[in-house]
Image (cartoon, rainbow, N blue to C red; front, side):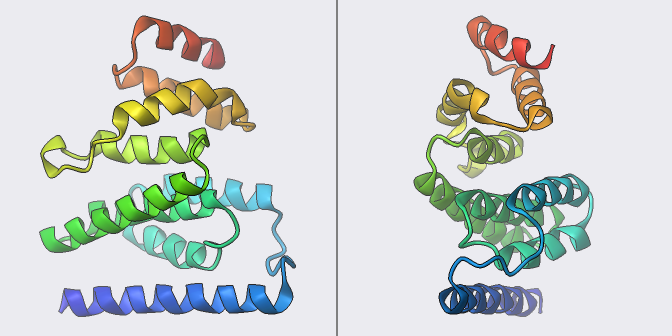
Length: 187
C-alpha cells in the first residue's frame, strides 16, 4: 500500500517537473514566481529547518521544489536534501532506502552541475554525516568537507556561512588547520 502511494508521489513530482520544463520553454526565463532568487533560496532554507521534524513540511517542500529544479543546481540540491529527510520520516525500511537512493542521485547531479558550490556540498555532507556508515551512503564526507572549506567564502549569506562553519567544527572531522580557518567565520 505504501509503495503505491510512493509511486503516486513520484508520478506527481515527475508531472510537476515536466510541466515546469514545458512552461519554461514557452515563456523562456521569465519569472513565473514573484519571489526573487534570493528570496526563494531564503524560503527554501527556512523550510529545510522546519522540515527536519515535519513529514508534512518535507512533502510540501518537495512538491514546491519539483517546480524549480531547472532553475539552478541549488534547487536540485535542496530537492535531494528533502528526499533525504523523507527517509527520516518514512516508516518502512524499503521506503527509507528508496528515498536515500533518490537523495543521493539528486545531490550527485546537483554537484555535477556546480561542483564547487559549498552550500550544495554541505547539504550532502550533513546528510551523509547522519546516515550510518554501514548503509554505504557516506562515501563523500571527506571530499565534500575539503570543497566546503576551500570555498566557504563563496557563501554570500553570512548566517548560512556561520552555520556551515559551526557544523563542520562540531562534527570533529576537521583538523586544527581547518578548524582555524572555520573559526574566523563564526567568531
